[in-house]
Length: 317
Image (tube, rainbow, N blue to C red; front, side, top):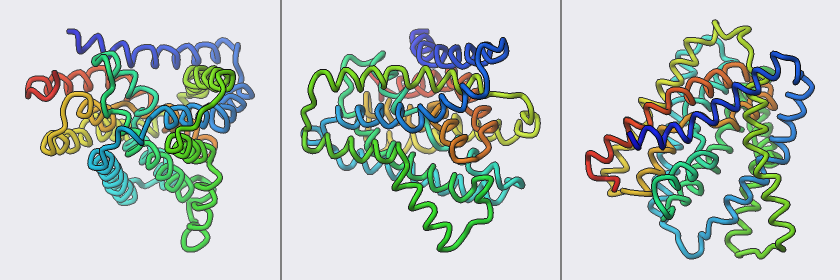
C-alpha cells in the first residue's frame, strides 16, 4: 500500500495539473496564444534553466560511477534505436514517428525521477548519475528523430538531413542547458546567491507551466486516429522496455537508489518536455500529449508493480 501511495503522490499531481490546464482552456480562461507562448517560454527558457541547475548540482567530480552511467546511456541508446526501427517498419503515417519514438523511450527522469526516489530514500546515493547517463541522450536523440520525422521534414535525408539535425542539436536550448550544466558541475562553479535564487524561481515554475500548456493544448480532434499508436507507445514505455532494462540492471548488481533510478528511467511516464519539443519542432504534438496522458495515468500502477517486484527479489530495501 505504501508503494501505491508513493507512486500516486508522484503521478496524480502531474495528471491533475494537466486536467486543470484542459479545463481552463475549455472555460476560455486560456487560449491558443497562451499555449503557444507558454510552450516557447518553457522550451527556450524554463527547461534549459531547470536542466542546467540539475546538472550543476550533480557533483560528478566526487561521485562518478562510469559503469552505471554507461549502463544508463547504453540502455537508453539501444531502446531508442530499436523503437525507431520498429516505428519505421510498422507506422504507416510517417509524420507520427517522431512523437511516437520520443514518447516510447523517453521518461520523465529529471522532473519525476529524483523526486520520486527522494520520497523512498533519505539520500539519493548515485541515482543522479542516471541523469548524466540518460537525459543528455534523451534530448539529443529526440532532436534527431523530431528533425528527420517532423511534418515539414518527413522527406529529408542525406547530407541535408544530417546538417539540419546537427544545427538543431547545437542550437537546441535544452542541449545548451545540459552542456553548460556539465561544465559548471565539472569546474564546481560558484554562483552568487541572488543568481541561484533567480534561476531556482524560473526552474520552479517550469514544470507546472509545461503541464498546464499540455492540458490546454490537448484536443480530442484527431485523437481517435492516434489511439492505436498512443496505446502501443504506452505499452512499450510502461511494459516492454522495463521488462528488458530492469532485469539487466539487477543482473549487473544494481540495487536500492541506483536500481530505483533505472526503474524510473525505463518505466516512468513520458516526459512533459516531449510535448513542448514536438510542438516547437512541428511534429505530431496531439499524439505526444496523448502518450503523456496515458503513460502518466497508468504509470501509477505499473511503477508500483515494478517496485513491488524488485522488493520481493530483495533488490530494494
